[in-house]
Image (cartoon, rainbow, N blue to C red; front, side, top):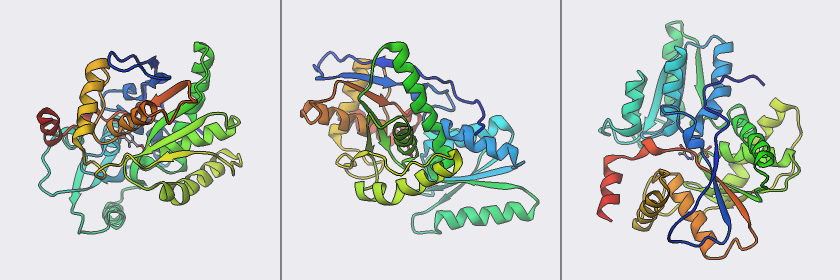
Length: 323
Ligand SMILES: *Cc1c(COP(=O)(O)O)cnc(C)c1O
């Protein structure tokens, strides 16, 4: 499958040292937070495939959805701006959400933003409505699913998995475990798929920030894997995955003081920025598993840093500073 080249890849892998913790395993971070500035994070790897298709089909307008502070929406708006495609965002949240962080960048990129309340229209129906309106004016529309997490988008993380295999050879290291955040789970699906194709030797761990383990395993992953099979011609039927749903905490985008404290400790000892919604929660989960000796058999752990620095809102910054 063809894709555009928008992201700075391969992203580097760095070993992390902390001054205040003697980690019982080697911890490495794959810096997918350095895929670009406006493009920062994991979504751009998916968008390289999705926008390739959009260009091939002569699409004039893309529509996607997410939360008000969606990193995916911001990366989509930036990529659309780069490619000269109109971008429409259907964002769920408070109508009076402040124009800050990702939402500000959406507007800066010239995206058409529609904020809908939780009690309002179903976001998928709303996207269909926007699509009809554009089509009536003669536009050619592509709807990108939430998080860019369909089979096509997830190919970006199949590529990332293969990139990791190449980097292992260069570095002379074997990662026994690859840890990522599980949101809409496209990143996880791509890594799981790559691991299955390569013989399934690694433990691929997804740390959920919103959904239950059962939902991710039974409802979210199977259709993405099926679509990837259709696109690649492979027939992955058996794959293994570890999903932890103990670190969702108070719920999506809601932080606990101990998570904020952890983020502060981590960033101040590494110079690597975590965000409160995704990577902060997942890294907190990773450390909890490691320090509680749940992962004593693991030696070389690779965490995929999926970005999110633009997700810090004023409210979250104030919460962190108050801690
Ligand atoms: C979207 C996102 C994730 C989750 O990726 P999915 O493929 O949706 O599971 C993780 N981290 C950050 C910073 C994100 O923006």
